[in-house]
Image (cartoon, rainbow, N blue to C red; front, top):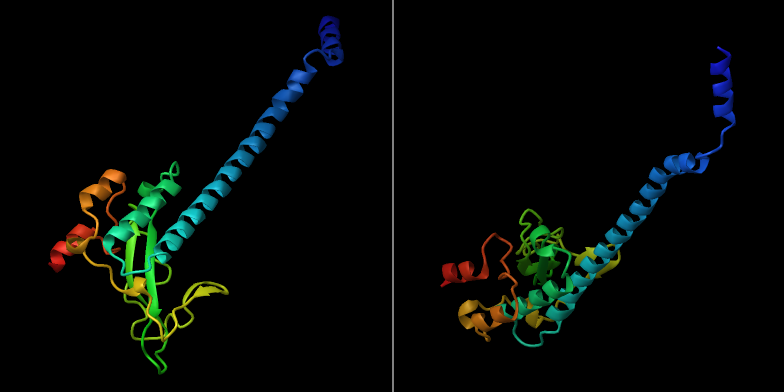
Length: 205
């Protein structure tokens, strides 16, 4: 019995391996904090790059000074592909380009309307938070324009942006489709209604 008591007393006074034991308790918490910080940083960076992609698309589309066509839109989305490189955005997200203009009404229905939309990305379940193509045409649903909070954009009643006109179809592309596709592996943008530009042009023609 005394042997057991002595052994327990020796074990209680033995400080060998104390640091290793403390590290074993602290390591999981420390690793969790480090990995959480890395993931939060990665999330913030991904959000930043997605925002930059959206701003790049809006800026490039707004630089078209003459009548816009599908070739212009194709190249705008090609820029989005390069900007979002490494994010796997195309298979996991959706980018919606909307053209906005005044709906032409001067009564209580006066507001903005989405003239056309083009989409890029495979997540077809994602819809525009502001409405689909044609939204606001006969009512004031978009009276204040597009945007959140005080950051809204709207077209003036007495102006008509060149980008507000519906893009011409494939049969009137200014640049051959084959040469555009050689420059980028980007899939053809869709009309946001589940059809590709080629399909919608075929149906219209």
